[in-house]
Image (cartoon, rainbow, N blue to C red):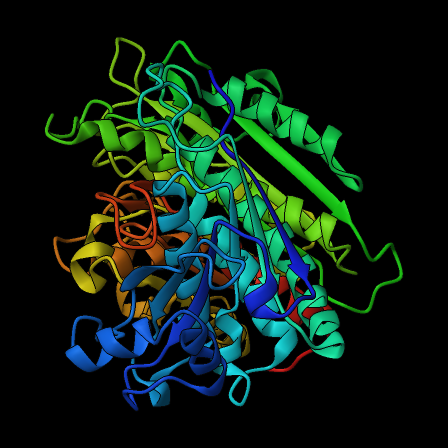
Length: 513
């Protein structure tokens, strides 16, 4: 395996026309159709090229569009990239994050070694400077990511390293940008770690190797501790759900426990459990999936890996919180030893579940992990999972489903979604849906009717959280770019890392909903 491209982001204090770089990027709004003062000064130095292409209509400055101009040595940068920002009245922090991602994606495609961003200059009267530094760094890491660990041919290979500067001439603004950039670097790296691990195939990542990655992460991250439960340990804790799902594979299941105690024993802030589904490959088991596109089921571990990466980010940000990262992991395969439709499984909570479909396996491993969080007396429990195709039917590939039992927690996660750019939509999972999950021969069954599948799945999980404040994120459809976009390569998105880190950061500061 070769190493993923090394990306380094920093803030540089310099005049924009004097920065020596392969490419300088500036942002342009589509309304009004004219350059702002910063861009006008740069454009004047290179011969009004930008103004000409805008007036001709060749560059409309719509979101996620770019135009590269060559400076012919008239400024220190070899190229000037215009990045479209869309309408100014609609612009948000996520507009800036996406613009930085587009610029970094284009830079990697052009084999550029040094990229300089001045995108924030277009937002100076609209957004907080510290937050702009964070968004630029997050976007820069997101756009520059390529998953090519197993590509052996070297032709058209991208750069091994990419240096990205956020350029600001003013000393005070540079200091503010640097503060935000430092946090953005932590989150951006964590998200790209999640993307790398999620993209790895089932013959590389199975429950035991995922557990080894978690142990490695804990060793490399100050303040993070990892414990792994094997089959025997799970049997002692009666984790029948995880054991059943993993029973068909030679790769035995694991229960990964990450702990970060940033607040110590006397904290007044709530203890949080993040629970992530990590099915390292999901064939559907005995209720086997169709063959078409089954290769994408290596990504069914995305929720668990998002939790791993979020714990890493929380530790590196030194958040004053106590956090559990609970990751039940199994491989769901059909074999002579697989669990079957019709089986009745006793879960760690003592509740019994009638199996009607072995492809509804995510909820079976999550229910044991949710019960573990309850036993640890966690005040807030948030689970994240590529749980249901029904959620994709409901919301498409634009936002994740958000469910839960506490209005304040839901509001905080909605705020975090807005802050992080990882969007969610609140959906129901109350008593009506819970009734559908009742079995005639056990306490529960693992599927409901054909309608409202995301809601009934969430209602099933809600039976295992006792009195804790709980939220469920169904990220099916959000875990992958099936094709490359103008801002990102295809493959895992690492969805949930920015969202959960934004939630934890706000919680650590005592922010109310």
